[in-house]
Length: 77
Image (tube, rainbow, N blue to C red; front, side, top):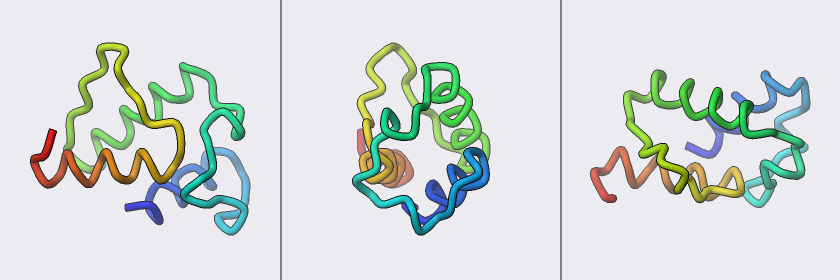
């Protein structure tokens, strides 16, 4: 899952995949709240997963987002 997110971000931000790691934070990539909403919506559509977007989106890094998505896909809340 990390690889998919990293590839998505690399394409969206015009950076190399190699410059990203699971520890890369969204803040360090200068993603604002609108960018995050767009990314989450894209991930929901592509992966057919639903994030509870009630302000509790807690992923701060690429690795945390990958873990969150993997748990959602496995049916673990």
